[in-house]
Length: 118
Length: 405
Figure (tube, rainbow over the protein chains, first blue to last red):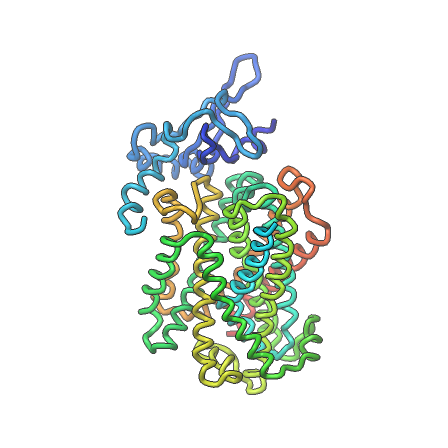
């Protein structure tokens, strides 16, 4: 398996098959005397922005933290809970139990639902 | 089987109805006005290229279950996706503004109320249709109304064009005057015909409609017949430009000149018919462009997206098309001329073609996505050559045109 080609930027689904974003980053664990291994996948705009500019990511993280518990830092999914299913990666966690969709929910609650027809 | 036949016929009809927009109407009319039939080859070339591209996009989405922006990010990474998307967003916003300007221009000519005042109402109308409408409503409803643009074909036939000269002009020829302007108009026609938003919208539609590999044949029929006949509409506009403007040495510089395309064949009724054609064609294109922008961002960034659910279920997606329409409305509100916006938008579209098209061709040759349905050599060569030609011409002629004017 090639981490960059096969994992990074891949689409992620949750335990119900619902959209859970994309793999924005991969966290490796460095072990003394052994090869590094994949520890977590990160799904977060903070991780994505950090790939372009660390300063931009830090600036955004301050606002992201206001979206609630678990936000303001990248959300990490243990690698052991991820499997490949066809063209997508699947985690055995319900996306509703994670902060992945916090921005979507916040926008939906505070803006979209208040507009007629939203 | 019946359902597939229905999908094919509906797909063909909506492809034809949705083909014309302000870009193709204005640039084809300018081509006819400036050079008679001589630039018909640019419409033919653009139509061939968009037919291949639409077929490829549909095949890709049907076979892989993924859309193009989705696969672009996956295959080429976030940095590449960010660069191509930024260029696509910038160019498409200008084109979206031109389409909204087209609707406002039709309303201005009908009422004498100035374009900037209509800008807000046009933006609200387009937004409300997307906010409340479903994908099939946008895809089928508005595009079916677009069949009114067949009036251009009827008008062209009524004015008895020289079919011999037209067919001869299907092969490229060198200009006899205003060389820089000739190539610039050719580039604008190519940019108006090969619109990336069209095939991004189409590939998203394939996923929205849940097509699979069994639709590969149907997709081919729809793209070839739909786009082919769509190209005829552009040719008809060019023919009208060649008959109405060219002999009188009239250049199309203002949108107020355009209704005369139909008054020659239909008298005063042609004026109103043109306004209806322009308004409906631009409305359809506005909805498609706004959706294509939202689709691209949502698919690349991993948001939930579909036009078939209520806006609060896809808040980021819905707010993206809302913001795009609002941003484009500002261009119209400040009084930028729709024809100028169209010219800039179409030339920039042509210049940026290879940035999106070349990586797309790499995807189309990847068996991981397409299995046994990867591209043939002929498809690769045709799309690569035409896109490169359009981009080179654009890069050369845009500065010449700016310097000339």
